[in-house]
Image (cartoon, rainbow, N blue to C red; front, side, top):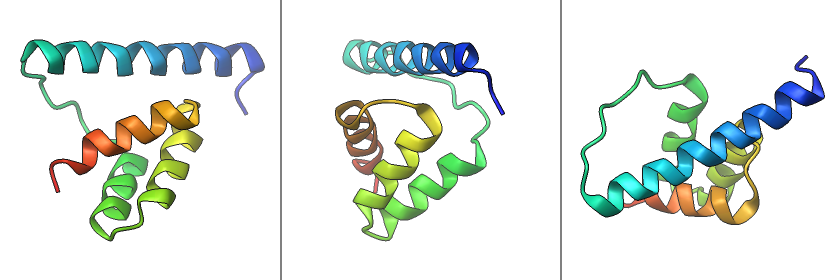
Length: 81
């Protein structure tokens, strides 16, 4: 189990990555696709199946982001489906 300090660091890093992704998208900078984590594939599967709320829950569980940030991320992911 991760220590509380590690969890806080992971949350902060997730928020920074999310914001950087949004900035890059706004500027039209293409992103290279990193290897996909298994949980992220599950989030995408939930989106494709129309279970957006479950996708948001999974995203929050694995990233530690708040509801709005997770919803925004899932909304962004769902535009490709």
